[in-house]
Image 1: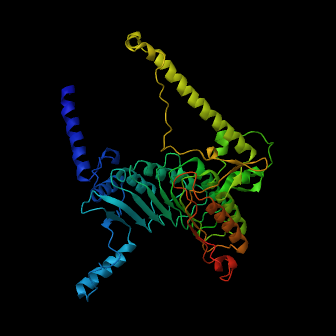
Image 2: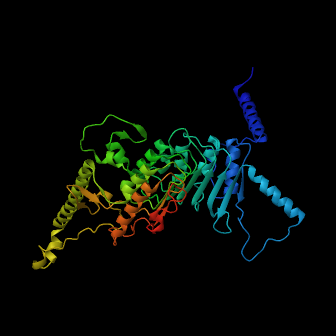
Image 3: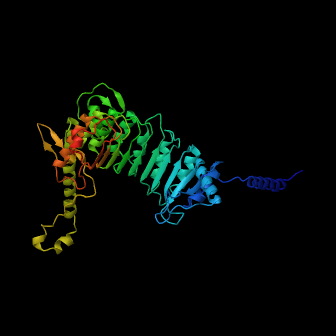
Length: 453
């Protein structure tokens, strides 16, 4: 008869044999257990191996695009020519190009992924190794085949990179208008390029809505080489006017008009584009399908515009909240002073016991003022705001704008120039307007007269 004690050593031996066999086959622990070191050339291949990715793109330093100024190109040897030809055609293989701030592999500041599809597993690997790069500032993605289901994961990845401020996602058309998820409220992007992504009017509506509701730190937005028409330009300029006529954002077909009731603040914030955006400095809409109607919509938000009924209601609510907030702060300060210990009050001279100075809380100069709280004027029973003077560069080249649209843009610029001193420091108005390759003849009086800034 076998005893129980005889079975344990055999089971231990079998378990040890299985572990040795797994080690011989190269089995690795799961990727979640790996701690990134901040060296991309080490972390990336290791994470790819743990994720089961067979073809691992190589991490290479981006070559200089030209010869130095003090050197001239010389005749190369045959071996050097073959090496350059090999490196030239190796660009067709998937790889990750990086730029460094200095001679340190940990100082990667820019990453380029071009011409190869990013699968789910690869996106998971990037979401682990890119946040470990403390100096990463820019990511350039060109024709990487991202899907609309992967964009939220990409947005989350970017949010975990502390210094990342620039994203270029180009040549990546999507069937659904989901590019606005990259402009979420938790996004820290300052420069966003969405060129050649087949963006239409529906996607432009979502982007125009996000310009005012989500990422208030976005400084530059590139939407060139897309399919944005007059309707999409109107959504980007002032979505609120589209909704006011019964249309919905991203929906060209008019909806059933609702009764005119005061809309809540949250709804209005979701209904404005450049009309209430005061952070964007540069906007490129080049190489689209924008005509005169779209140019007129853009001109309307550059110059003074009257507030709608709903905007007037929201302005009053903001003014009331501002006054109530100040009075609430003053009340708290007076209560805190009245609750001082009696010993401190006794130490004060009799003349100063009832005259304790009250410190007023100064407004934070870094906190942006809501556009509806800007200085307004009355004009024919309407409240008129000065318009968007934060936008400095507007690129409308290669569109379908005729002299009619040019006249509206010039009228807005002249209105901006009449106001010599801007109400807000730094908001000087439009400084550059690009209108090349439109339907404007070179002999147009506006161009010949030098009316453009």
